[in-house]
Length: 529
Image (cartoon, rainbow, N blue to C red):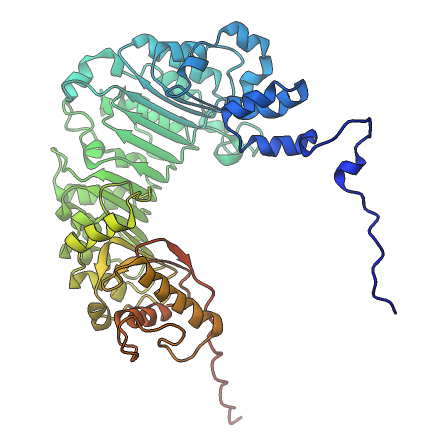
């Protein structure tokens, strides 16, 4: 029987297009134009829009999707209402409006066609009129707005008294913000009908406020109204006019809060009896504390009691700059069942490590940052800069090895600023056998070439399931061939983690091939019966 396949009769895509004497190109297919438009610059998209009306429809969306007034001032701040009316439906393509800082920016958005904005960031400067225009913009986009960032200009001098004194810090747009989500009774009526909260029903999910003044009652109403809120960031927000006769909303489902200790307890320097903000968040799971500066009106013991009582399900905490003693006390005494912790290397101490080890039965992730960048933002320094800095300042102390030794359930261990000594690693063996991601430096692996060789050997052992752990395919860096050099010891250390999939040793992330499966357990002996 012949195995020769008959020629395919399927015609290519462009052969199906009508032949009218014109030469067709891939850009004649609307679907291809839509895909290509995502990767073009705004200037190129505008040029493509001028080709014909069909191209206009496909390339106009990236042009209008994001308006950043810090870059597009000359273009978008001068858009007239007539222009938006002329290009009617295209105003509805505006999804993100960033860096609104002037009255002219808000006036450019005052049009009925600008009514489907999802992300809005603004910094209001020296004008109560800006608050009024912002209120109009928020109300017009209340059905679609999901992320809102409102910053007022930092007062000068930077004091609470100065912030209270000037009217431009008062959030007159609070009534408009409350319109962003349906009333509480509408929640749970169904999904996708515009009446429920969460991802299906819509509503505000991310809110940032900085240097603003609002009443405590308005803040409570905001949390009660915006029950789909997933992340709240507060910086120097004064919550004024607390009255014990007012019932505060204490049923928010907010899972993620970004606020310093002083923001939580020093709500209003003129009212030291106001309850802490934590009373609003019984379901808080993640708390990012940018500053550990101690509040003026509360003791550490009271702070500890507030955290443990108000936030019983807090599972993740991220510490910024501040006093290591405060961080250690919160870890050791205010939290139960902690699963993830991020902290700066500069607040590491023996007491901080003991606070982490107190959660050894539940802790699955520990991240130690340099302290010069956000815990969620990767560093941008070169390998030489970061590597040299680490060797000069942050050689790991022996008590630090208690974390991987005692926290046996760790899945992620990230200690980029620190340098581990293999002598200490061998002295204090790591017990986290389920480790999946490791980010650390090892003393002795001082060049990218050595790191590449080390990780290549780990991959070789896994890929070919070599039983003997040593140096076979590559020459030992120490040249002695006995497998006792730093490189060989690091290889042995990494091979003990069978689930390890991502490794960073100072240069870049490496993705490990899967480890060979563990041998099945021996069969049970037959019973006498």
